[in-house]
Length: 300
Image 1 (spheres, helix red, strand yellow):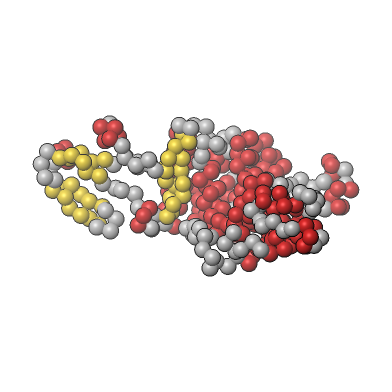
Image 2 (cartoon, rainbow, N blue to C red; image 1 turned 90 degrees about the vertical axis):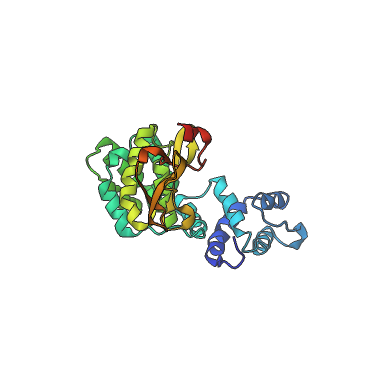
């Protein structure tokens, strides 16, 4: 990450989080706590505990700020809203491919929610990773009996997605999650995680959902592409199809009895047509994963 990036929004957000996170320390433990967050140590004689925290944080350079943020995220003690705010600022720096709201809504209308929410516990865990499911209770809420407190999104999902699965469509769920308004990086990671082996325990189910998603999002120049394996299951990543480095090899000719007669339909996209007898030419046209093509793949 370059030093020239404007990280003022991240610094402002972390200021409160860091102070709250470190406030429980003493003069004797604060330097160790600084080290855990990759922050510089401040000698005891340089001020009160609060002043030491402020001085240490002020000395964190913009270039090192994401490291502090990552360590705070790794501790997992933040509210979902604060966690998401930090993540969105970090993820936006990777310049994720844009997925317009119209494409997201058309995708939601095309997806069967039952294909995504096959396993309740796993699907809820997925939603917890990316969205805010529980409302922050006010003092007035705490004074009410627990059975009189207004339900949060988590309870609504359990009611309308699992107990009464005909209540909500995928579009209904996405609307309530805030998926249509979310940053591109969050939406992309959510889609990739929704088709992972952590959520779907069946490879055909993974590939079925990936095909459905890709049919809708390719118009935006993105697709879920198989980039590796996870415990024997395929792993998919959302990538841009408009970047040269991300273009999928479409034709790999690796054997021919005679010199093949090839016609280029598009030199930019590597679209070719084999003229003559295609039976004399061996072409590898299967999915190419992040592992590349191995000799046994060609043999098969």
